[in-house]
Image (cartoon, rainbow, N blue to C red; front, side, top):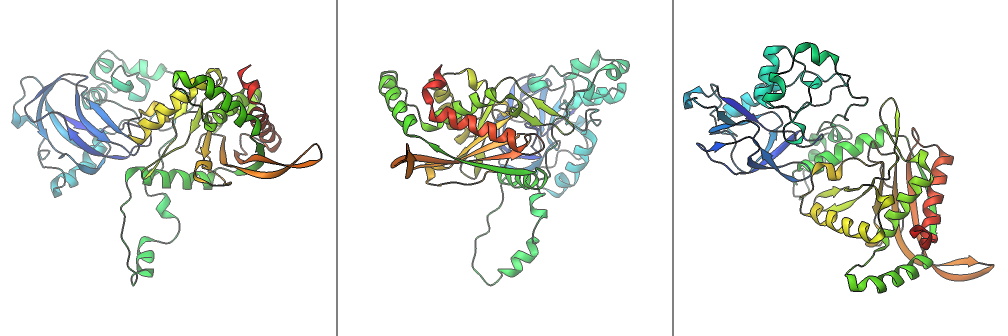
Length: 429
């Protein structure tokens, strides 16, 4: 029986993608796990693996097609013994034609899994697995997938029983649902009103890509729904700059050069250990506190940004953090990060000091409870032992989610970060 290959959801926030490249052609035999396409999500270009075996009967979406909705049919796979005329009626229309556009929503609707019991989290399953589950009356949200990235495949549902699905305990916290791509545009003046206002002025219209839509929707939602408050401190960097220079001189032979940002990551990671109640995230109806410091760091790329996560940062050396951050930043700019490398964490750092910004307020990226906005280190007059001297001072602002961290707790966290940076040698103890 012919099987529709659907546009996969390659990240929790993905609602549509671009089919960048086909790695197979019509008539090719494919095996489970074989890479058949490259798909651009709102964050990265990722490889798409076949889940079932068979022969490519028809490619429904052409290379380079943007805006393909998740769960829309992109190709037809014929199983052994199937003839070309076994393809679903009407699915042979090329992407972009009226027929294809009209049927894509129907395909998405037919392929949609039962709502997850944990609160609506998306279920990843192959079309064949969905069909078998429907025939057997199984709840896909209660079945653990063994396919790529936890995808539910045929073997997972063939041996499952309806009673077994009901006995599985749902996850304590559901994955956060992706904000609608147009949510950010729903606030403020309408498109028509803005176009009318500037009708007599020359302009160039720039279409929003998937990343920009996601950033707009998530941060609009965050600013509206997260009760932010802000704590500000000045941090003296003279001791750190001197210590950094000494370390870099000794590490030069190994090709290691530590940046101020590496020290900031380490200082925040240790501060989360020193103030463990602040190492937490908001999970809807509860707070999750962590024993490890997973710190996300904002990386600017063309058209947007990534926040790759350095896990277990408190246990890593400065040189290890430096090497890992350089690797993550490079792959972020090349859009080669895997979802697990930029999802998660409980705390984030956004450093605009390298761009000459003195200070700013950053927006929390849910479900994180805080983000540190880092400004430039500049020379200022400061008072030491009753005398005015010139010192290098860096201004930082801690944006805090009041649902998770109260004022006093936030102040303790920021004080710990400040103490770590002003006494850098202690971070190696």
